[in-house]
Image 1: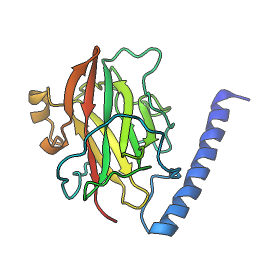
Image 2 (image 1 turned 180 degrees about the vertical axis):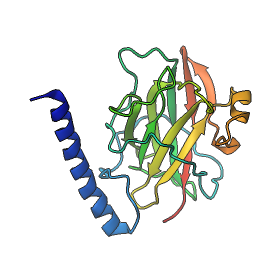
Image 3 (image 1 turned 30 degrees about the vertical axis):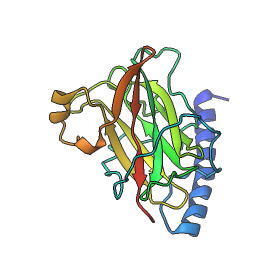
Length: 211
């Protein structure tokens, strides 16, 4: 069978399964769903990330932009064999408005490649995972580059088992001029960033409002 046909059939199957999961979620909670079944907490990632002392009412939402693809692969690493970008570990916590960790929450991320392009036919630099019992997530990926009109950023959708979907974008703190010229940029969506073992390490904690 032609590979493109096989891929379309596989994606159709995923969409049907995701649609059934989404319908079940909406029936239980009355909330919109990202379409992923909630399997419970992921295995312990042993990140030991200390939660914040106080939580905001909720992380600011932001536009998803035109390049979101649903039902991405579940994976911890978005790096590809031919990856040329600067390695980045992107990690953090998903928390309720009272700073409780949200175990088993889904976090779906996507960003452009090394040349400022989005893969709109496949899943390059796209993926999702579920938080562990401490609410922690950890992706291995690359630093996306700037492209026309936009500073470096990572797109994110997050949802707990009984919370609304949060759609937002996360930014880098070491690009002050580019950030200032991006009309979508917001200061409170900047990650903490440092260097470790020849890779960038970024942290951002997402706080989800109650249903």
